Length: 391
Image (cartoon, rainbow, N blue to C red; front, side, top):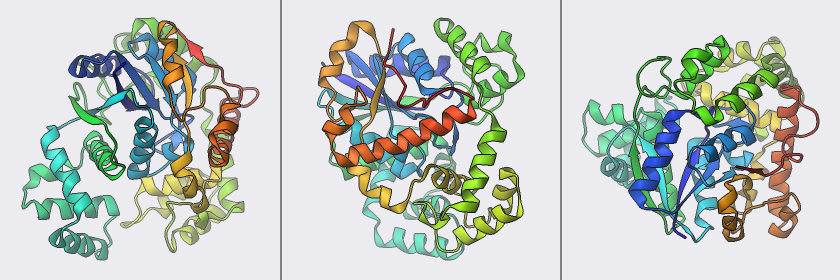
């Protein structure tokens, strides 16, 4: 079996994702498509739009063969940790020969950028230090240093500002860092931009899809959500929507009572700033806006807040190498895949077999599932009670 992997969030699943699955399979000539998908919380450091099992089932209905849930330890982290965590899981499975990445730009320039950022030549390092000393966020600083190293124009800066390109570069770096025997494949993104709210054209963004759900504009949505999964997604959203007020209250309480400095994304002084804001404001939105600065982006502050809520600390980083994903959906006629998934849990009891660190990592997933159940007013724990979906 030759398989292609796709790292995804499907928040929610739409026709652009179905195109990406089909195109990835066609380019590679692979027999099987395996997804590694964020779970209850996504890389934007927010609760997922709907529960992972329904998102995974929608993917399997539209051409994917199996979906593995990415450990929360990675899904709530900065882009480099997110990418490395996903590549670690993929690289353990011998049948996976390719990793298909959705990108806004040509793969060759992304390979070149990844090589520069990995090698960090003197000119690059000097520019990076200079940008950081000016107070620029790390993501902006590394983009600035890369542009200067390649003596490039504003065109490269634009390429490095595209979200899918940024993640693709991190996947490329992770493949090289881990010496993974995986061939990167680039699928050009079609349709509206990543954060676009436009609701016309061939494909819309997940951001626009979420907005349409909020507006209950199901007529427009029906053009962009595959027919086979439309009913399941809309029913899940209507029954168990995320309650932002509960999520905000839980997060603010954790910021007032837990040690923020333990967050992996925290830096010297940032914990003090967030703590002061949390004592002053009851609204999470107000806390985020007050804590944001030139050096610390909104994305990073949101990650610190979410990591504090979930109990993800610097000590959790030692679990990275052994963190195991969990299979949450599989196509009925591809169940034979399950026997070939190395280092992946299929049942809750599998974590014990995978080792102590895998168990500790699963405990974080369990906390995420418990909190997600609360904010969607769902009984039990959505992680530990989750059943393998088959289609």
